[in-house]
Image (cartoon, rainbow, N blue to C red; front, side, top):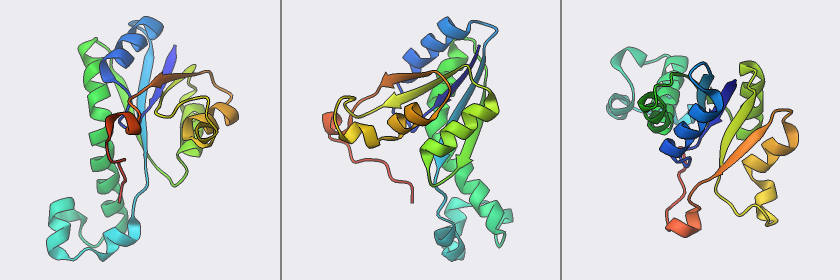
Length: 167
């Protein structure tokens, strides 16, 4: 079984890893992905001192290298907890950092490219409200041809957290 785990950082890593082990078994293929909107204009505008904190010295002047470094750095923060949980259960997973402005479209495209048998996503909104039907997970459910398992995460309003915004 090929399982794609699409995360923004709200999926609970250990339960997701346990679920993947049960569904995919030892022979399953797993991929963990996240979608990051890369602020190319912002990265291009960074001066020398600011750039040092975000990018390696060899990335200076190359817009694509800057964007790749940003994508990797942001993506790692989001997928690493799930990768660690999968590894603790003896499961290996590939990683896919996808640059995009439309997360639903990027998730659907990645699921197709990976030929996922199952797509695992988090749901942070109440499922039976009008607002939920405009969510990324609802759009993926409507538009994807793949089976989807939504795992409830902590809702922002329940945790009083400030939503994560990639700049």
